[in-house]
Image 1 (spheres, rainbow, N blue to C red):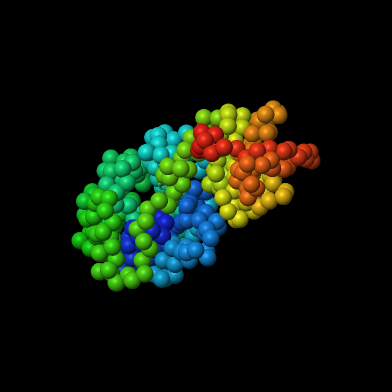
Image 2 (cartoon, helix red, strand yellow):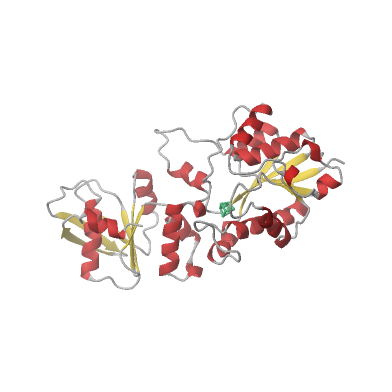
Length: 345
Ligand code: SF4
């Protein structure tokens, strides 16, 4: 019977190389691609203007097709939220709970190993590449907490790490594995060329919203103005879309930045205050308001949307405000840029 390994594959350059190395060593692999709800690539695919730059394919799927193995895309987003709201090992430079995230995913991998009858798992991790989760101590903590000690092979850095069970048992030839470390992706690009992988994914990084400073600012703002445990998958999505302006603990406005975002926001009007400019082209704006807004609050919100419309800036603009069935029309001046800057997240 051959050896079977389960790979945690994002489709990035590192996991692509890890998969290629094991396939070349004769290991049967099955790919797992987790969807946490915070994936930048998937979101970009939905919201990008494809007339400006062609969209990249799903790299994990493309890899599976190129190397001829099965890939399973597994949605773990619902149970993932507590990892984000209450991480045991805290956050990284942004709101990225990388150590807890890896433990959560590895625990899933442990269960999937049984389901797929695999002997070990592998990842594209590189020692020292990510400051929070890929230093030696973190790698050990993650393995230990997920009860996978010795069963995680990292083909790109194996030569620098303790031998794993698949290496000790001779399922995989340790001599054929790499000893890469550090943050530079240049060595991986050379390896890709050596392995004759011509169209490999760019080593771009930045695949997770939780590691993105702008998204993290909005998530932090959510946690400061709500109970952390109130976070829902709908909030996770809303934080990815539009400009966000925090006016007070009770009031936040979300303004679409392009047609796709405006259309998206229209699908999320329920339970939110909606603002429109009927006489001019404008962005779509939703306001999340706790309790009853004052007249001044509504005027301010209408002024914000007037600013994001094509209406002349110095003259009064008609703005519709709808909440539930109630619609009113206001006449306002566009909000000044200095005020917007103080509210923008
Ligand atoms: S960057 Fe995001 S997906 Fe990657 S380990 Fe950190 S939290 Fe998880």
